[in-house]
Picture 1 (tube, rainbow, N blue to C red):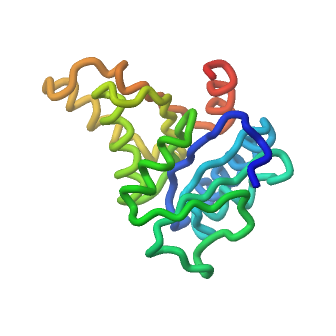
Picture 2: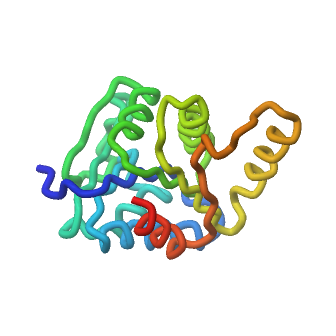
Picture 3: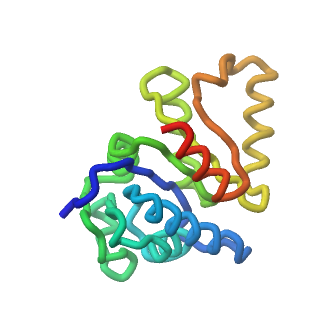
Length: 185
């Protein structure tokens, strides 16, 4: 049962924890900060890695947790079960689309191929003018610095032109991220 109709914050992040404690700690802090502001969390449904830490930090008495899960991953061993709403979809592509469509803003934490795919998809959708979502890339421990460099190269070699269309912002702390959301939504 959805109890909060406020801002839906989508978080893309890894199902693994990475090798730095700061990744887990910031995921948990982000989850807490989203709920502290009475915003809803939209995420991929996992109970492990950064996904698990994110939802562990979220106080469900202050907002809703909306989990979007492909049928192939609908396994109780890897999913967080205490959610306000679980949406089952046919595949990863539909999960990504559903998460984007449900969200008012998107935050990307560190992660692997899936996280990178999700981030690049919404960047491309914004760039093409199909979507107009604000995207925050939470650059914990400079994890996303290589992506920054790649984007600069793409711009420098004129494969992309107007980066403002992408509507993305890099921040290195959860606090700066939350402040940006408060000031821009």
